Image 1 (spheres, rainbow, N blue to C red):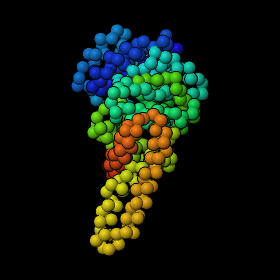
Image 2: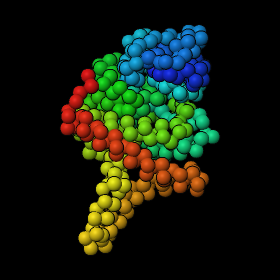
Image 3: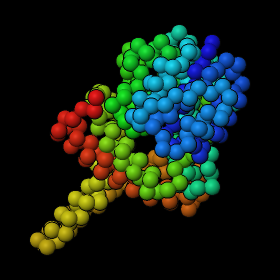
Length: 332
């Protein structure tokens, strides 16, 4: 069975060589590798073209969802395997994914390792992902597009990735939900691993998280029944933490100041304290699980990052509610 490995790439020249070397070194005997250059302004196409046997196609910049669909149209395989240009799959990656595909299973996904452990932020990001994936059972309701294989027939039957997601956020959730709604089963395997260059700059990481908040509004508008509890990767605490963080950071301090001036500050201060306590409680479960994976200093840093990240996501949510909810804009 031919497996088509599709790699969307936007300005990925720096990490793409390691990704392609790993994809070409898979122990699975029957693969093709396709790089979709998504309107890059660097040497992505030239770098990919240096690898013998790699198919390189290009498009104007439309985002990873459109790039993955472009790759699917070019692909000759019965199975579509996706990873990203900043990922390095292990040699058994494809074998581990294909082994779990059968007549009932339409998609199989795997997990992350870390490619840049010298970065504190990267270590924190990896530790959180590892904790979340450690709780996955074999049957799941979400698979990330960084490490996944789809039956091409099932992929095409639901229309592939929704191309109105023009950033890397929400499009893999959307596809997972569509496959399940069509009766397909999703599976997770810890044997399929790709090492990822996690973000190293806090500002760029927070910008990405702000975009996640923004696109989540569209995702849950398109799939309203998932808005109540999220999915197995991001559950209800992840849904309510961002708006709570916004209240803690902006709304109630102003109310507290006003109430102090009016002479009723103590009551309001108690209410604010309860809200802060409720917000803090949301992070206790993940903190308890992270304590065995991070040093004390990294754990404290992680807690600070989680709080700031919630606020970044909240700002994205506000923008998304305005754009997708109040204005009811479409990106089609």
